[in-house]
Length: 465
Image (cartoon, rainbow, N blue to C red; front, side, top):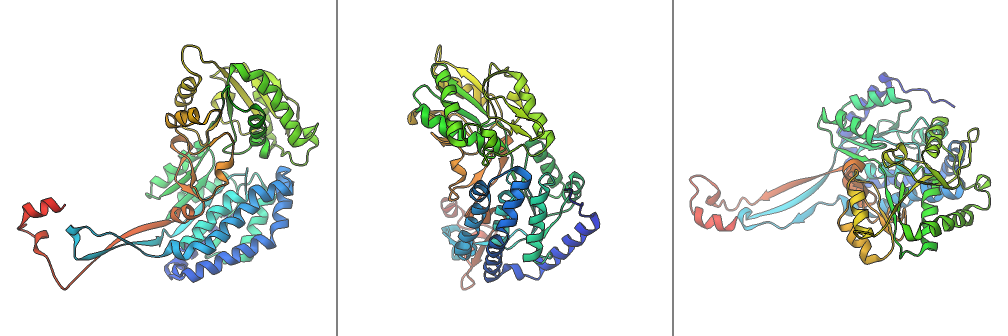
C-alpha cells in the first residue's frame, strides 16, 4: 500500500483555512475545547478496531500490545485533559512585589496558534495523537503528518480525523520527505516533531527561519546498566521486556548494556530464559513479537549481527522481516552498533569491572563520554544508582526497571541535548502548545512617583528592588 502525497497546493489551502479559523477566536472557548476532546475520545472508540487491525498489518503488533502502548495511552490522555483543561486554561494570579504596587499580576494561558505535529512510524498512533490532545486542550489548530512507512495506520488516521474534525481545525496530510520539506518550509506557530536526532536538526534549522518554537522528541543510545548486586532474574525479565516490546523499535528501548563482569555470563543465560518466558519457546511464533517495519530496516539492524560475537539469539528471516532478540559481545566501541541508534532487537554487551576505579565511576565515564540519551536504566543498589544518575544526564529513566517512566503521565516525557528538547504528557502537553503571557494590571486611583524621572527617593527604591 502506497499513500498519495498531499499536494503543495492542498497544504497551502489547509494552512490558510486554519489560520483564518484560528483568528475567529472559536478555539479560545474552553467549552469548545472540551467538546472537541469528547469528540476525539468518541473517535478513538469508533476507530479502535481499524487502528489495531492496521497496526497488525504494518508492524505485526498484537491487539494487546497495540492497546497497551498506543490506543489506551491516547484514551487516557484525552480523559485526563477533559477533566483538567478548565483548570489548566484558567488565568493564574501571581504575587506582586512592592516595586510594582499597587497592582495585580497575572499569567494568561493563550494558545500558540497553528501547530504542525509530525510523527514517526514506530508508535504511529500514540506519537501522533498524544500531542494532538495537548494542541486541542491548549486551543490550537493542528496539521498532522503521519509516517508513510506505516501506510495502513496512516490511512486509517487520515480517515478518522476527517470523519471527526473539520480540516480548517484539524487536518491530516500524507506523503514522503518531499511533503515534509514543504511542511517545514511553511510558517507555523509551533512544531512538534518526533523522530531521529538527524531529522530533528533539520526541523530546528527550518523552524529557526521563522523563530518558530519547537518540541523535539528524538532518540539516541539509551544505556542499560547491570551492577553485580542486581537481582538478575528481575533485571533480565524487565530488560528482555523493554528490549523486545515493539521488537526494540522504541525510542526509549535499552540500546546497549553495561554489565559488571562478575554477572555477565549469568545474565546472558537468564536473559534467554526470560525471553522464552515472555514469548514462548520460539519467539518467531509469538503473536506478540513485532517485525521490522521495512526491508530497509531489517537490512540495517540485521547487519549489526556481524559486528560482534553472538551470545544469545541471532536468527533472522528476511522474508518475514524477523530478527530474534540478540545479545552481542566483543563489539568495538567505534562500530556502527555502538555509534548508531539500533532501533531493533540487537543488544550489544559491554563488560566493565571495578578494578582501579568503581564500576559506577566507569559507567559514569562511559555514559558522559557520549551524547545525552533519551533514557537511562540502572539495575542494582538504589544508593549507587542515584549517585550515578546525579553524575550523568538523560531525558528520563528508571532504577531497576525499563520503559516505565513513560507510563506515568503525571511526569513530563522528553529529551535533553541530542535526545531532544521540551516535554509533554498531561499538563505538560497543554503547556507545550501554550504561551504563558504575563500581564500586570496597575491601579489608577494612585500613581506613585518613584518610577518616574527624575527618580525621587531613589535610595529607598533601591532597597525595594
